[in-house]
Length: 315
Image 1 (tube, rainbow, N blue to C red):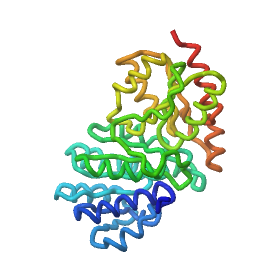
Image 2: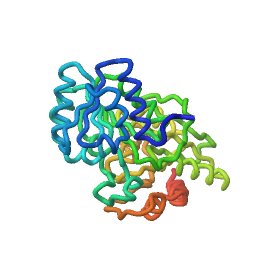
Image 3: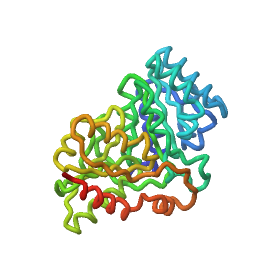
Image 4: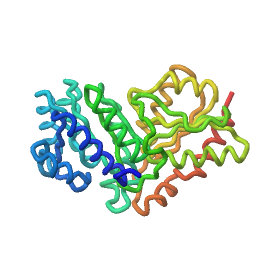
């Protein structure tokens, strides 16, 4: 069994392992140490923990200075506070000079806003950072993949945004399952009637939808698209070519995230009809996490119905 329970703990455990092997790794916290479940990092590496208080813009600027000095800072806090409140600093002081700063955003998606409402349901974050040049964008599915992904992004040079959750994520992967940055992972390959692409914490629902379709005699191929930028165009295009129709499933606004990324690949390489299962460009309410997803059209049934609709549009 893993020593962490949730994606925040997984991030901290990965960062602890990195810091133990390389003294360039640091944690910059805008009053987010407890939210990130990272108290153990501050206790073990007090000289590599920098607390700036509730000042996300300053946190990014501090991290930029550290990276410019040859260190590798992680800035970790709520997803929206990184991508919205500190967007200009992220863009201008980190992405533009291509500094080696890693950003970890928690409470990504409407799945994460059960207690705190729309101010802490960040369903635009991936679209915001995807639009900024030079940033790698990663949305792993569960705690095991977050742990592996943190290790993977630490090994590359340049800015990265990784979306983490709030502790309610469903475990999809085995603890030792590898994470290959920039490459999709096909999880089910029942056939080529329709393709399902999913990312992040709704992957478990996409898996259930693929199995439901299979029981109905509809053979789907399901892929986990954990790296949204750079997108794995070649592998996605091959699946689109084979299946002729696809559905993108994401806990994000249908504008700017996975669906747009898959659609960009489709229009360039293999135009096919694509359904979008996600937040339909509305501000959601809050409530029990699973119920909120169901209410806003991200249920297993919604994914199945989207697949049936898109199949009717196949040439």
